[in-house]
Image 1 (tube, rainbow, N blue to C red):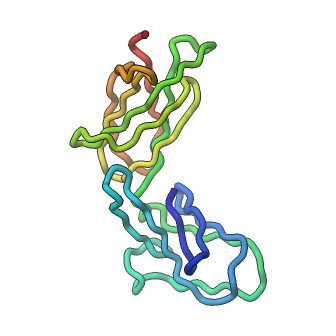
Image 2 (cartoon, one colour; image 1 turned 45 degrees about the vertical axis):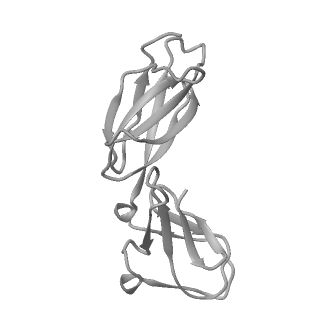
Length: 169
C-alpha cells in the first residue's frame, strides 16, 4: 500500500483514488509526499508530491492549524502511478468455493504478483498504470493452469476482470 508522509515518523496510507487521511498532526507547514513501490520491479519506486507533481519545487505547501482534528487531502489520482486491478474468479459451482492462485505476469512474462483467493470472492491487485499484464488462475496445490489467460492494460477505474475456471482437477 502506498504511504504518504508529512514529516519523519508521521505517515499514513494513500488510497487507490489518491486520498490521504491523517487524524492528528502537529501544527505547522508541510509538503506531502507519497511514495510508491512498483510491484515486480525490484524495489523501484516513485514519489508524488501533493497535489500530484513529481518535484518538491512544484508541490503545494499545506498549513495545519494548532487544533487537533482529522483531515484529508486528495492527490490528483491521475498522478498516482499505481491503480487497483479488481479480479473475480468464478466457480463452476457457486455453492462450492475453490482455493486458487491468481498469477500476474508483466509483458515480458515475468511474475509480478500472485494472490491466493477463493472463487466467488472479489479480490484486488495493485498494478502500474499503463502497463500490460497477463492474468491466469492456477490450482493452489499443483499450480496447474485453471483458466484462459486474460490480458489487461492497467488504467484508472478498471472494471472487474472476471476469470472463469476452465479445467477441473
